[in-house]
Amino acid sequence: MALFGIGKSDNAESRENSSILDLGKKILKDAPGIGNREKERTDDNGNDDGDTFFDIKSASQKPVKMALKGSGLLLRKVYEARINVVNEFSDIKPDWYFIDIDTIKTKIRKIEVELKNELKSNGKVKESRRLKKLNRLLEELLVCNALMDDNLDKCYEIVEEYDLSTPFAIHGLNCLQAARDGIKDKASTQAMLYYQANNKEIEHPIIALFVAMALCENGAHEEALGVMKIVVKCYPDSVEGHKLLHKIHLALGNNDAAQLEEAIISLLN
Amino acid sequence: MAAKAMTLKDITGYIHPQESDITERLYDNLVSEEYCNQLLENYKLFTLETELPDYIGKCLEVNDRQFPEIHSIIIEFSDLLEIKPPKVYIFESYYFNTSAEGLDNPWIQISTKSLENFGEEELRFVIAREFAHIKLGHLKWEVLCEQFAKNIETASDIIGIPGFPTTSKQLFEIYADRFTLISANWNRISEYSADRCALAICKWNIKSAVSAILKQILNSSVLAQNVNLQSFLNQTDALMSFTTNAAKYTRMDEMSPYGPFRLKELIAFASIENMNL
Image 1 (cartoon, one colour):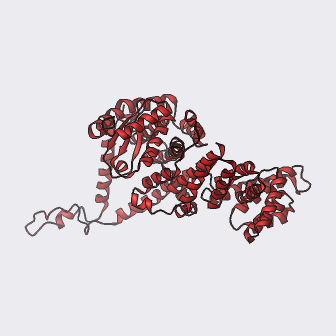
Image 2 (tube, chains in turn yellow, red):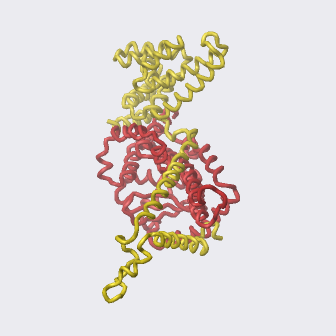
Image 3 (tube, chains in turn cyan, orange):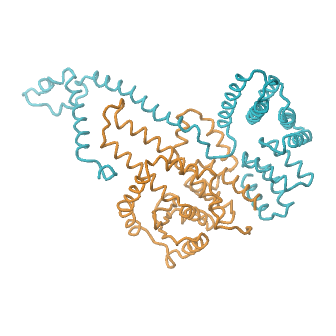
């Protein structure tokens, strides 16, 4: 019965209590002076001078300190074992979908390992039979690095090292650089070139935002709506994103959805 | 805000995308089906029998004569979700606390602080959350997690494991920590699901949803009214900057998602769901 949570058995409790008592007794027994305590602690008439059991001055601290020192090291090991259990869950995706740098860093590490293994087995990039796979890995690496705020330089390094001419390497980076420089027209043009060259697939939310803006200007509101999903997923708190969505919904006659976006905008402002 | 027509019969379409996988993972860690059944039996025989009389004896039951406005919300949501109306009790508390409890005949408990400080739409949202938990079958998993955790603790006190390098109590503590992370993960995902479903039930009233969540997180109407949402949501950056295992552990053992995470996800869900309507 006790196995299923009804309570401690008497045996367990008495075992625990006796072990604590034994430890206490051991400490006191080993402490010099305590054995003779009673002789020292009587008053002038030979009577016991109060309760000497807890007399800190006369109790030796050495065995207690030694016991504590030993337990400290053990405690640290237990803490580390308990906390390091998180490593077992490194494969669990985060609960959330918005961008966080830690997740991107983990993804970059994984891609770099996969890339390294791929390159080891197959030599030069241009002669590789698995060029497509390598390009995909490199493209993913570029996108992840671009998602890290100040990693465009890292992206340029990768492009140069591998002599890349993938859609992201050419147009994606140009779009992000133009966005950074505040040249919106160029960012928009490059974003659309990337979108077309990459079979209308986008993983980078900022490029997606420029594509959505360009599509809106061309009257392709339905298509723009689809593109905006990645923007909102990654940056749900982006006022600019919700303003664009509001505009798109109004153009499509989705009044309720437009009202929802308006409510979100007012919450975020 | 008038909403487009929604089919609330397919409420499972709103659950967090990871819920199925996380539930499966949780189940795999609950030893066996037989053991789970034993845990549920224990809950019915002992925990329920001790808790329920307390609620009935110490709280106010909601009905058509006591808090009729809440009663009508209960009937409305029960009809909408096609479930038997649960009992609802109002209990005295200094906290914004609303939860669904029980198993086969669940009930909902609402704190006096919630009643006194939530507006009507906010109250509808928090009640809708509990209906979502009931409809999605979360209560069974919550009970299993609680009972399993209690059992680990009890077992560690009475079972010796001779021959192992660490003491049995430490081994159980590590095992318990592992289970805590798994059950906390499940619990957080279930909270995200409840938020999403409740928002849909409450016709996408995002302002009331956000307001209710802020009050619950901060346990203060005054604090909630003074939140700058953009700043609050930016706190996710600071949270994610802690990358040691100790910091990850503290994030992973949370039974509810951190507020900024919860609200970001809800806003994203609302926007994306409305792209599909």
